[in-house]
Image (tube, rainbow over all chains, first blue to last red; front, side, top):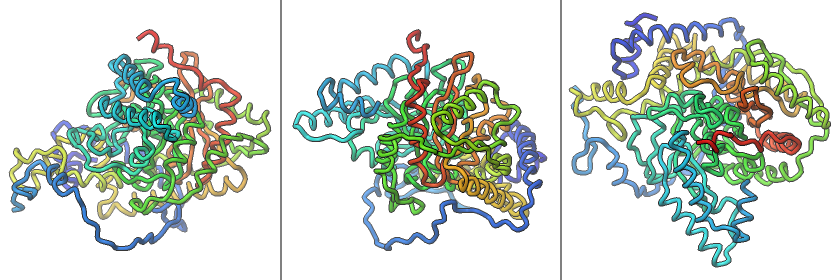
Length: 92
Length: 486
């Protein structure tokens, strides 16, 4: 994996990386992906994927609105606030 | 241990306050060297203990866990108490709610001594990835305690907590239990609620226990297992079975499978001999031992390092520097720059590494080759276990390929660190329960653990075999000598 590929992934993941980090990750991610390539040895043509291991599906509950009493505590967690709002930078 | 201390409390041999003070004193005395705790909550611990003492004084009946001081891994949300996941990005985060497992412990009047160290976001096998400090192994301070629940394990084995909660995603309870000479129980996926755990790999994360005795793990499981409306993946169970399992730990013809692929080259000879010795003892006591094959387990780590980073990259997406946690908003130019800078400076190296592998594996053009392929091989690993459990009741393997390693020795080789979990990861991918218990010591007096694996919801049989082995051996009674010298 090249430095510019790492840079592209870091942008997709919304992480800024230093030049040293780009260099380091290029090497490390390459060796991890080489190891993972081992999976190509396995024939999986007729195998289905697993995403839930205990076999549960469609667990429903009643859709009841409940009052949340934590509003002020939750807003207080935000690094930047104004009045009772969470403040964000301009998008453009 | 739990039962013993409970009996002393109700017979008024000592009070919960005295007991809590004793544990706090040990933390004071030992933790400067061991560094197991990130936060110690002395004042609230004493308040909780006093409330239990009042109940006892009024003649009120108290539960088994009441008044007993415990340590909690710092990726489990505790209302009003800092919960950092050992990450800078959550350095000052105080959750306004309790995890379900904490809520259940509070309802049973437990005493919380504090929050324990881990690899950042539970990414690691040594606690060296903590953004704050590395926890040391009480058996040898130059070695790691294992991880990611290393702080919890170190706290329990050095007598700084009666028991500890941990989380296990690929071995994070079992491997530190093995390295510290403790019992580590990882329940079936979904048996204990994940609500309030800081999510890592949602398809394998489970809360579990680090204890000195097998029966303690059974008590905790019976208190914390079961359906939780806040976690749709939870399962129901009959918790009385766990207590029955430890009340009469009989082997009578239990069939033990030994997977030939797990006793491989590269496995430490002393670990191999200890585990084989333990199996021989169980066989002599009436168990039936069979060689079995789990041919796809060798792909476990490769599958895990696709599945985990993929889920991590999604789960850690919530840390945006806007709603809570660490933020670089004052240095940022626009919104996207807040994300870049906050995440770049807030996450440690391993968290960033995993986010990037996951982002790559899930990106269009690579999704089929990596993520889909991994989820298919995962199916094969699960099928191997299913087939094996038609022939045997439990499977025994080493918990880890070696004893605790030296601090710093794997720091610059992430892949070597990943291979630490080679025996524990396939179990997690299949959602199976497993317990690690002490089964020997190497020539340097470092503990060795064996892993007993059961079928899904097979905790009863696991506990039975583990309690039986514990009853006829004395590895669990050994304590680190170092503590007397500190």
